[in-house]
Length: 211
Image (cartoon, rainbow, N blue to C red; front, side, top):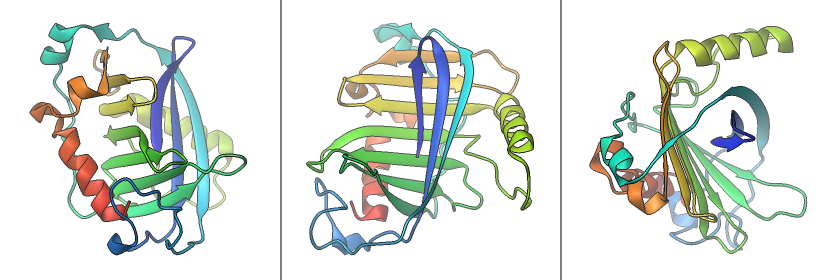
């Protein structure tokens, strides 16, 4: 899962990989949590990465929504899915899909469901989706330096919907070009053809992950 948000005016990218076989498409359905009774338990290996970045100020308003154009086209061929169950007191579940594959992902989509199985968040990243092929034994310092360099060098489009607070952020950033971002509501973006549309990709990921 890759989630992007604004904390104290600064950009934070949080990446969570759930390396697990996805439940079969028949094990769940729309509106049903992957953790509901009847869904087979799967082993999960996860890695969480948090990167602090530069601050940014998104534009607002209907005109900004209409004018926004993604710099990076979505890749939604193939696809691999993993299920990540949040620990502790939370029963929330995230389905994370990588296209065309996890090892060579160009687009990642994450769906987070609340304890009742309702979709709470949608996150999509096109462009830089994480470091791939890092040699074993690479130190954290080298890994972090490489990650920051890749983020800065790669033009990336990120889309984040938080249905719990009715807020959406779409953003083009990196690659040596100016930052562009717009803040609105999810319903103002989710059916826009120039974004994919998001509503169709959401359905595709739910089918792929069986959620």
